[in-house]
Amino acid sequence: MACRTRQVATNEVSKTKTVIRIQRDTILKTDPDSSFYKAWIDCINGKPVLKPNSETKKAGNYLHVPNVKIEGNDLSVDCYAVAQKLFKTWQQEYIEEHETVSTIRYPINVSKPLTWWQKIQIYLGRIALLLSVVYLVYRLIKQKLKIN
Image (tube, rainbow, N blue to C red; front, side, top):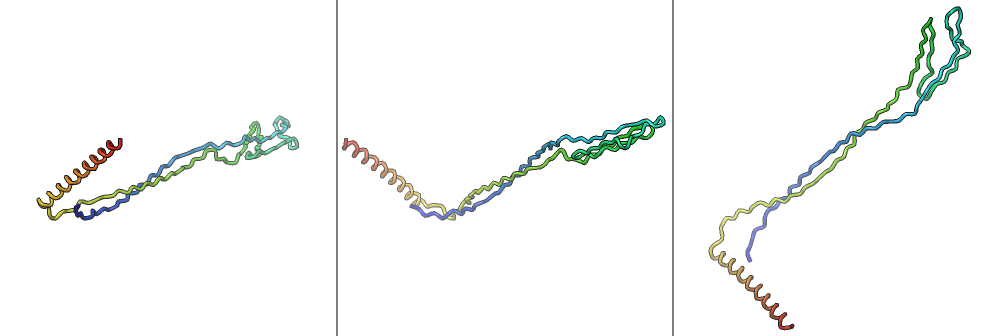
């Protein structure tokens, strides 16, 4: 048996953080929509004129009623719609945290080396331990053969 000083050990904790960002997108489907305008065009003195009593108008869900104008030989139809968002993007973020604990043992400085007498005692103790194990194995085998 020998005396030994305790080793000084420190635990070092290292933390790592992994951030994964995934860009996702989608298309938003909108229902079809329509607006309606119907009128009778009459010719008065050789010029086309809209009959005021013959107009039929209908607005859609997001389309306004068309604006119709006749000026001379020009027919202009304007139809405005409410703005819609059709494409959407977003980011998903996943955060993984890892913690690693590592133990560091620092070497101990020995002020004096072992003397020759201490070394001889260590070797004699090892030889005695080996002989004891061999003797026990021999006794077990001898007892096992005696029973059978």
